[in-house]
Image (tube, rainbow, N blue to C red; front, side, top):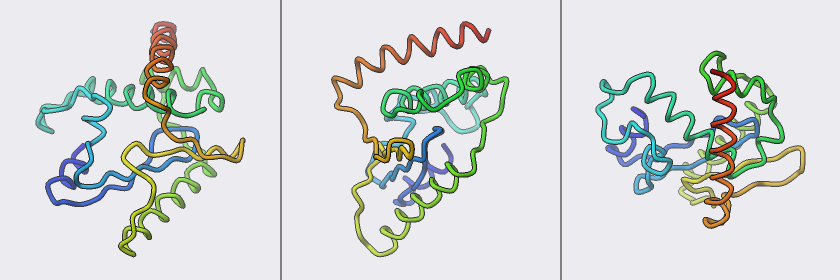
Length: 163
């Protein structure tokens, strides 16, 4: 959050990725909404020093909800590990091929930026599905609303089971 806020104040672009089992990339330009705003984090409007650990957990859950709604990530994850991660009882896992692929996607975006060109990647980002050999772009808004309802219910059941 500190990075995104500082970048906005400086008029800088942030190249980032989602917490996803699929490689992903997002490009947040100076005029774009920050993930805090776009995904509805509870940290919006709070001073950095006022952000509590539960705000960070809730923000992470909002990001996971977005990932599960707009990609096929759920098909490529161990539900026990995901439940422990969501409950805060396990650390974020690292899968080297996914991390390397994500780094490459981010590097391409940095090159576009350095060359003064604008890529097709936006603040919503996209996912690379190496299992299916395709890119996964954010869903059409009405479909995302419906799938989001299912995802939230699923995540609530997972968290209830982890408690």
